[in-house]
Image (cartoon, rainbow, N blue to C red; front, side, top):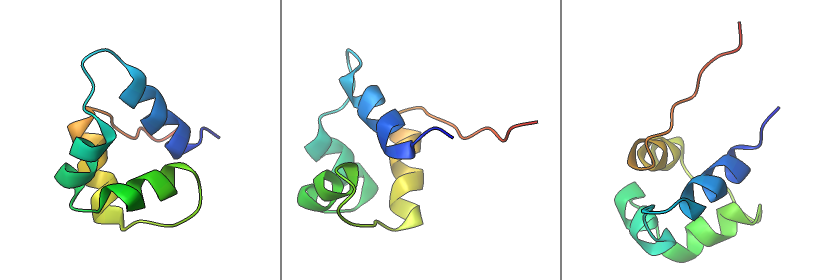
Length: 64
């Protein structure tokens, strides 16, 4: 199973990706909460994850 945090971190490392602070704002969470989530130290609401995935142009595809 791929770790969602690792996928978001990889997307943030791509050229042209938003900064963490901008991604956090787009997701409606504090930048320090995004940072803590990326380090596995806290949870964030599903709505924030959905907003981040949309901002990063990522989709979740179920396995067949």
